[in-house]
Length: 381
Image: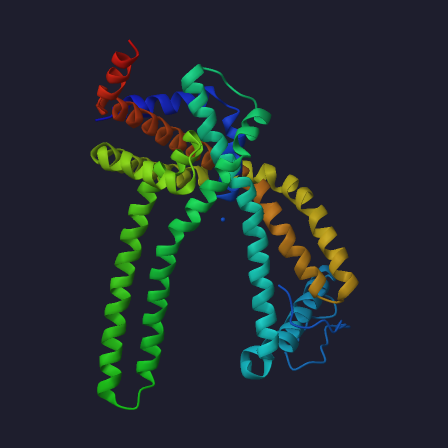
């Protein structure tokens, strides 16, 4: 059995003494979470709060402040844009299949692009943290950010990504099973015969219940095993299938220690959840201090997005795109204290599992028989 308490204490020491890891923790904390169907350059001219569409306009007294008139004009433009571009698609989707498919395709492309960019940061950062902690334990040497990133930007990070991709397959299959249960329920509701409808709904509910249980169970098991698979790839430089094999062997031979450590880390996660909730309210004065810097940081990307969108469209759409682009930057700066705390948590848990992996390997080596080595020595003599 591994020694849990010394591992937790050592991980705490690494977190506070090896502070260059904080930068990688921030990257992990950030990466570990519209467009219209046509381009017809619609122009909106709102004067005196009167809108020439079917949407009701907000009216203000003539003596209202100018900023209220500006805000009202913007709200009226938003209502008109929704009426002209969104309401027809929602009310008659069959006649707007092309628009719906185009929007879904653009959304999927955007998610793929963002996911790729996040993966290019997350996996090298995660690999760097594991290898830097491993090197620190072996030699006592603390690496800088550049050398640490060089350790992370390697084939090992790509293998970790492939491991996660393969681990996601069974969960995706179970999710599709859950979706099938929903489709079965919809088909049953539209069934002609009442008996068929009742049987279908009961079967759908049972299938959904089983699917949810399987998703939770498989997800928990894979989350435990992943700690061994990815460290076999990151620390030992093994390929994908070799990482699965070695990770499973280490877990199988030391499953009691692994499950005990996993339960302890669940407790750590619960404590962290309570801590981050309390910290959210304690950091309110910091949010007030960071509000203006957050606006300044968000202004430049919002201005760039507004300018680019204005080339292709006019009216409300450039403003919406600018706001959507600005929000991530604004909230990133505003809630940066919480991001830092989240980074600390990720560094601590990663270090704890790295130390656990190292100790289990030591136990594994001690358990392995030494007879072959003795035989070779005798032959050489």
